[in-house]
Length: 545
Ligand code: PFF
Image 1 (cartoon, rainbow, N blue to C red):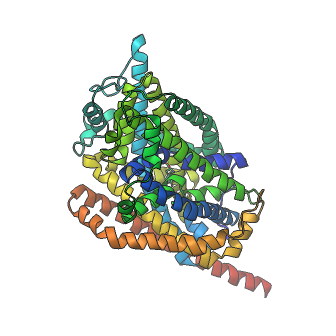
Image 2 (cartoon, helix red, strand yellow):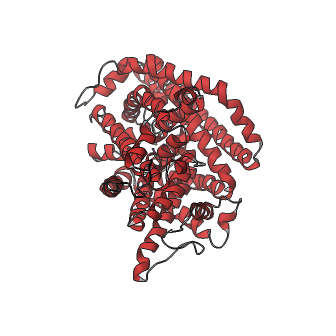
Image 3 (cartoon, rainbow, N blue to C red):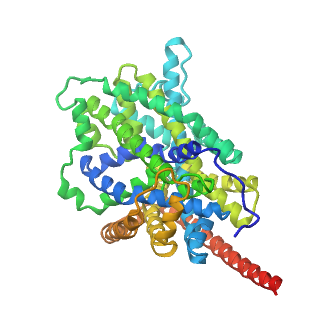
């Protein structure tokens, strides 16, 4: 069914869509969240649920989501509400589930933009330090030295506190740090500008431009890490000790019985590959109808895993252990500390650390933009499709709404109350629900036959025919089991923790309002589509008679 919101937009080439989906996947999740989560949840032991989830969930579901997206796109649907409506045999309930899925990517974007701007702040601080020897040094935050060479672990932690305003609510709006709020606004504007330019001229062109830059920066940093030797000469601080922290599973019994670890590992896979967040199906709905999606989906997933495990895993944990010892990694308080506190400390100790610090945070900044634009596109497509607005109006409204959420995160900064609440619901909790609904719709409503024929359409290499069965008989039970066990073991504790923070409660209320609005709009839209279909059928009948 086509309607007035139908778009003629398409990716310009196969490489373009692979780079855009990989760009969505490779981001802060690979270089900051993954090493942080692995360190917080037992290092090597975390990798076991992580790899199991990769094999059972991420690889099959990524291909299936590409298929769902293109199937919807071929019918003129580009937002998750339309895509799931089509896949679910035009049942309003499936459309509503798709509409609710937008929550995940959109809410992630509200805090992702803030973290993106921290990366820009760090990159600029290092640039100021790099230019210092020739007299051009500058610091965008007057209370922090250019170059972030701060000498002690406390110095780096307090610089991070100033940059994020984590000491008290509203402190970012003070005179010395208001530049950070301005940078958040700048990042938001850049993102919307790219979305406004469109799929091919905005998103695809930008991803093609920055992909070589991201690869080049990572290449230099990896070479630096591999050539560090044993910089302090201390026992237990060699490169192999660093690698061992990530790959030697220890305390297996304790770690593997904790459902929080399984939830964290599987959510990390969703966050990192961008699947089950509504971003991938939206992007792939713009793939041309006879273009390959089988090989492309596997290529994009593998490119992301390479960047996460091989590059992200190598760039952060091993140098932290080599310079600061295992204690530094053991004592991190949150998954951000590793990237924004421990790593700058490492750059402070490393020869040419200013240069590598600049390179690392520039890499993070650009990879974050290619991800954050993909978090916005589902909401823009949703507004276009549900309200039949033009792209310009949809982009404008989506921008205003995102700014509301981002302002929340910028204001309630004390102990990251808003950011943590947004992150928990959008990046840990709802991707699971989305994944369960998605696998259920694929297995029991859309059907494995349809999945196979969509994947085979235009395929350069056909995927194994058992993929659908893997989703139906392994991914779905696995997701239900992990999520059910986690709800039973840990959900109550999580709700209790909400009671202690007023900012977390306000943030939860804000998120609940988004869910209600999405539900009402999705319900109204799918009912309208149903009504239009009925009218269409009866007018066709009248013409025949
Ligand atoms: N995959 C991105 C990262 O690893 O940083 C984050 C992300 C992108 C999450 C798109 C959700 C999303 F819809």
